[in-house]
Every structure is written in C-alpha cells, then in structure tokens.
Length: 341
Image (cartoon, rainbow, N blue to C red; front, side, top):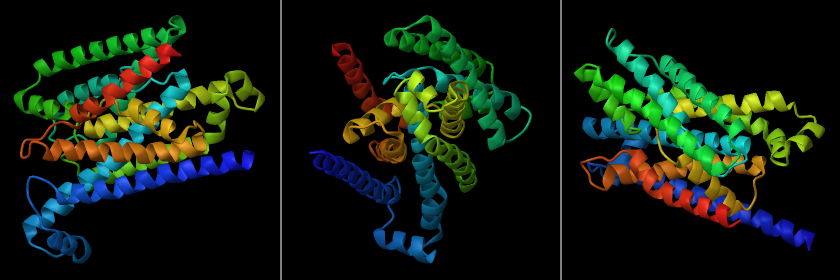
C-alpha cells in the first residue's frame, strides 16, 4: 500500500511538472509571436537562430519582446516564492506581499526615490531602486509583524495589511501630486504594474538578485519543512528559530522588492500561485514546492502579460489588472474554504 501511495505521489509530481513545462513552452512561443506588430514565424526563426531578418523586426523581437518575456519569467517566479515564504512565516494561506501591504511599502519608497532623483538626474540605477523598494518592504513588514503579535485572527491580519497598503498608496499619491509632469507620467506607468520597457541590462540585474535569493530559499528547504511542522519541532531538529524567521522576512521582502523595483506592484500572484501549486501537488514539502512555485509563477505571469498585451491591442492593459482578475477568485475561494474548515 505504501509503495502504491509513493508511486501515486511521484506520478502526481510528474504530471504537474509536465503540465507546467508544456504551458511554459506554449506561452513562451505565443509571447514571442503575438503582439501589436505581426512578425511571421519564418522571420522569427531567422531572427532567433541566424540574427537575420529586417532591422525593425529584429529590434522588436530582441530588444522589446525577449527582455519582457525574461522579466515575466524571473519576476513571476520571485513574487510566487515571496508569497510562499510569507505563507510559511505566518502559517496563513492568504498571506502575500500585495495583500499584506508589503508591495505598497516598496512602491512608496521607489516613488520617493524616483521623484527626488529624477528631478535632479536623468536616470536612476537599478541598485538604488532595489534598495529603496527593500527599505519600503521592510517598513511595511515591520508594521505587519507588530500587528500580528496583537491580532490572532487571519482575517483581521489581512484587513490590517490592506489598511497599511492604503496608507502607503495614499502617501504615494500625495507625493505624485507634487511631482513634475515628466515624473508623473513615469510614476503612473510604473505604478500600474508592467514588464514593458525592460532592457537586457535590467534582466541581468534581476536574474542575479532573484536567482541568488531563490537558491538560498532552496537550500533552506529542510529548515522550512521543519518549521511547517511547528516551532517546537523545528527547534528539536536543530533549527535556530530566531535566525530562521529573520531569514524568511529578509528573503521574502528582498524578492518582493526586486519585483516592485522593476515592474511595479503586481497583484495576487504571491497568494494565488503558491496555493494552486500546493493544491495540484497535494504537498507543502519545500524541496518539491519551491521549484514548482517558481515555475508556476513564471507561467502565470507569462499568461497574464500575454493577455495584457494582445486582448485590446494596440492598447495595453497592466499586468496587475489581469493578474487580479484571475487571482481574486482564488483568494476568495481560499478564504471560504478556510472558514468552512
């Protein structure tokens, strides 16, 4: 019986991984092919493998679509991992960077930096934006941690997180009111949440940051698995709880900050995707869930970005709007199921 259960479990992992890989490849190809400018399959092959084709099509594929796709893959995975870590930390399936106001804190600090720096200089470096977003994430996370010590009900914690998000958004709107016209346009486009305008330089920076943080999360799989069984169990297994909790906060905030710095706040990916992945796998084992969550987040964001680009082309929606349409029903379902339980 145990062997059969083990076989069924591995089969479920294999089927889930296969579905995610197939979806990933299909969405990758569709994202390369579809857009406001039509590029034939023959020309795409020529551009990708021979660096040929006409100059306009070459620029569209190599300088616009491919960096944007890479951003969707990397940042989608990062946001999902951030959500998974927060859900582990709070032991709450509806904890996520957007709902708890952490994305809004990052957004507020990035807005401050963009207004102050861009009013004196023409550009701001990726490192400065990530640092500002990380500081904002840590400020919001600090408030959430203080509230979580007073509030035991998950629903109240979420309400408090939403309130923190509103305060940060209000502060951001006030600052935007006093920015000059050029900065208002930049901030408005960025604050909607989008992968557009990503360059290969941005991709290199975000890849370095996200891959390093993701590798650390994966190496912590054993400790995360012990923590999921309870703090006492984790302590008995030799986990330094204080250090472990600090690492979870830093890693989740850092991943969320990186997403906000490059793409703006993107809603509900950090809640919906970890829940879907765990539901399909029927396990929370970090060794399995961590890479699957990253892949699932990449697939989800590739799909949302494709819809955002082509649904009303040439008019483009924000990725955050599309991710909310798919993410909110999942969050409501989780809350209703938790209430029934």
